[in-house]
Image 1 (tube, one colour):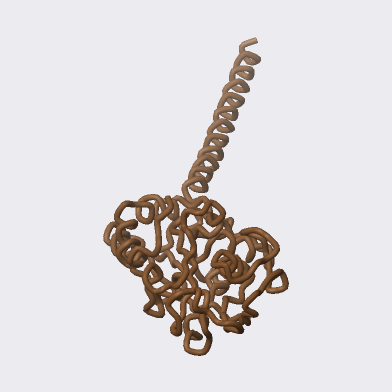
Image 2 (cartoon, rainbow, N blue to C red; image 1 turned 180 degrees about the vertical axis):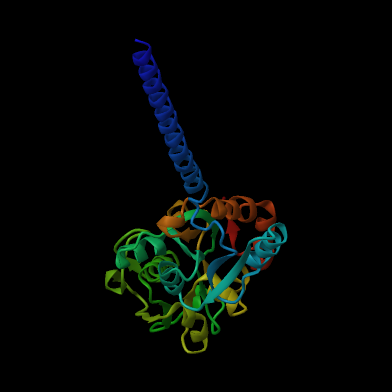
Length: 294
């Protein structure tokens, strides 16, 4: 009996030790898994660890972003913002999709929606910036009523800004079109053209440069400023920024789907762009021609 008791006791000890060993192994295996989960959660921001956030813009006059960059880079020793400049409107979106930049800030909702539709992309706005009224400019006349029969008018050739320009010409009383703001109309949708105006389609960056060769041109605010024009002073006709139908032309900060929820980008938008300081710079640099809309 004593022998059996000793054997039973020995087996019990062995089983007990084995059980403890198994539990210890399970703990050892579980803890790293939990740590891995925590590590994964901590690094879900796709921009975490990136020391430069690249912002795509169009044109040379970027006083607003220059000011934001100065403030952001001063506050952040481990990360900075850098501007990447483009000359044509499609380029910053193409660069965004290629991963060459992290966000861009140059386009309005209408242009973004049109680009996504044409390219099959899903770039998304993550913050509103300004509304910049489109204007009609001329180096030959000072009032829209002075346009003569057969006058040549240049407008941007991209679909969204081309349509926007045609609606502006209608508002100015020069033509009538079939459609409403936001529709993708073309020159084929002109229903009345009493002055037989010749509408010339040009790249957006060419519209301001064409002023010596045409009688008037529809020029986006940014391109006008790059050409040393002051929209609120030099335009012979300007969009009404308060028109509810023009809200599709609010400009945005945009990025790709994988970065839209980045806390780093949210910080830039909320704490550096959407500030009273930025509104002041917008007013100063545009000479009252652009308006913060957040």
